[in-house]
Figure 1: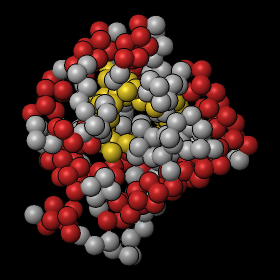
Figure 2: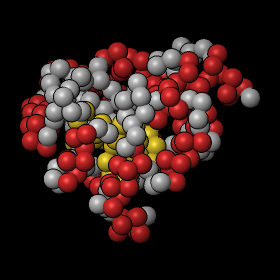
Figure 3: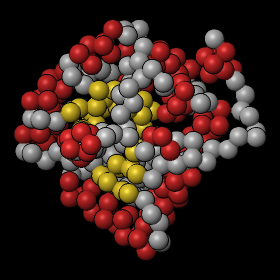
Figure 4: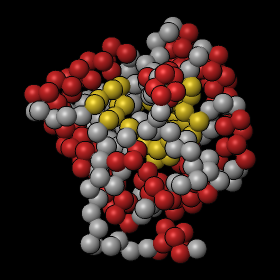
Length: 261
């Protein structure tokens, strides 16, 4: 019980360092590093600062996932590609070695079906697609969206399920989501109190049940970066997630690469 008790009351050990504590993740599959296209990094300069922070933590590969949210962040493959190209050029000009891919985080809203129908999804390698819901109310289209994505050959991943407060008293819904074919991604900051005590409790409950398939930083700004450093100083994240089948390191391997491994 000491390990779990430490999650709620442990103290940071000052002699530890955050350097390379997240190297085991390999890929950060959820972040908002691309400059100026959503509520994440506002410009290239901050994007580079955040990327340097990820590298310090041991993460050298990333899939940037800007919001696609009707009426708020109306991103398209073109806007995402342009921001990605701008940041890639800046990384090259500053001689920063960092593998930067791009996709999107899709809000389940009235626009998403049209995006799928029009073949305008900006998916990750191997056709993974990150989806999210409003924090205020459950999307009635969640299961239909999961079904539609799977039928089109995509693998949906639900972002930060622990943050949907309306599910906190209905944990069986998470198994129903997984049974429908959707995978679950944990925000690393959720294991602290960054988003609140209830979110932390939900995250730890899902961890104990071995429900998570992926982790992500969901990094938007330097406050997230500093908080993440504090999390990895305070907690042994890899040990915490030992019972979860975290797939970040292998999700983009080809079938042939998996056979060789």
